[in-house]
Length: 597
Image (cartoon, rainbow, N blue to C red; front, side, top):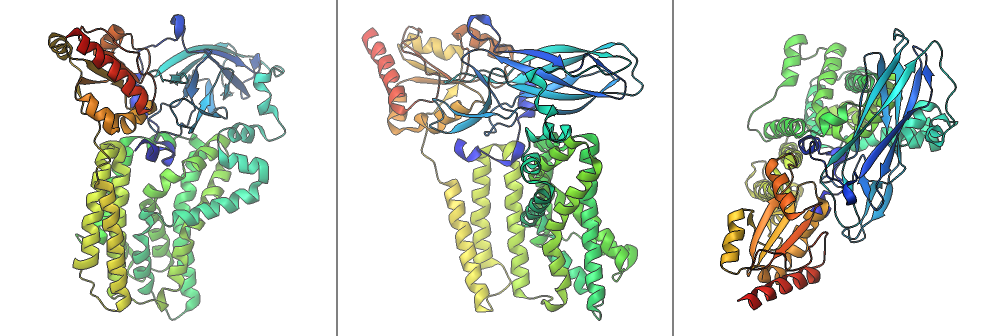
């Protein structure tokens, strides 16, 4: 199940978990912090209205690494730099280093993007034109998750500060290696962005023309997303209702409609470039994703005929069914918002790119081109709408099928709220029910024969997909919540104990759950143990601190084996291990219990 989580939509970054985890400091060996910061400004003095670059060097303890800013697994905590600056200094962008791809003992050959000692985060800071000439401090705080080759520690943070001196003129830039990359031959803003964003890398390596072509292609792919589906029947219905005596007028109306959609996305790009890359944080929030899910589900239920959403009727009430160019443009504006929930999460990288560039016109143009790609199929539908059937069994069934797909998209968005296991069951139930309904119950009929074949075929595929989602993956160890009383009871009965310390952000913990903990031999042997599971996700909790301190838990995963006397009887498991190593420790612990009897 964990492997299915890898490389999911950008950023399902665990912002709420990260915030909850702050406040508990875990140190490395010898009590040393895993990360220390060294922050320096490129210029000793900066004149009002000028900008400088601040380099924040990550001094990572030997033998450790930290997660990248965009981990490849949503359960891992990203490295995030927060900068607190006075009103006289604006933070234009924060650029993270290119992570190193490395495999670890728990990853079974899978590589993870990580940062190591010496990596540098760059911050572009701009002094306002009215800033007084004085020394001011920028506060730096890096939230991170430190890991060794075998285990990951709970989230922690490191802080530092750097003094910016606002003077009458900007001093010469430092030549230290920390600041060399921003002064490369590529434009400074673009160079900063290219270190952490693929769009900027395309500009750097292939030029702007290729970037615009790729953005247009991305728009074509986004036109297949569930939120664009409602626009297909609505577009057909609207343009079929227009006067079709003139092909030229129909084409002009279609172009006006597309212009409205493009305007919505252009405004989105302009806002991103003006305010910075803020949309990514919204789209990583479960509440925002939950809202998207509700919107998509509402549109899906409408397409299934449960009720009717009538944006075209609303437009018609304002300007008449044949409102002409004004009505087509306004409809395009509104439907750009309708499509945004699905296309938004997929465009975070582009939003981040234009936000880092801080070039509003470039952002406007890029999103205009993206919108052109999204709306090209709709433009074709609008132009040729007069040649398509206005109704019929095929159109009705396809509309219902699209409604089912939209409900599936809603469940997909809800997975971060419900958890992957619950979402899998929800998806399975939806697919089975919808497959049976579309194949045998839906009232579009069975003629022509091609419709009957597609109905049965699509319904069968959905049912099989749903069954695969709900089939048991193999029973794992049955755990009970950690309780001190259970350990005492086990000691009184001379029972061995297994304690599994885990957290939702711990990748290796999930690997254990889906791997060794589901092995049939391990599951069978575990029944001879008292099996306790301790959730250490909320590291602020006093209870978490107390229990981890008692057992000397320094990182996760940690699996402890207690003998009948309540003392450890075997080496701890500190990483994802094969079933054979887990069985070895369990046999050793159970053997010590047998001897004690």
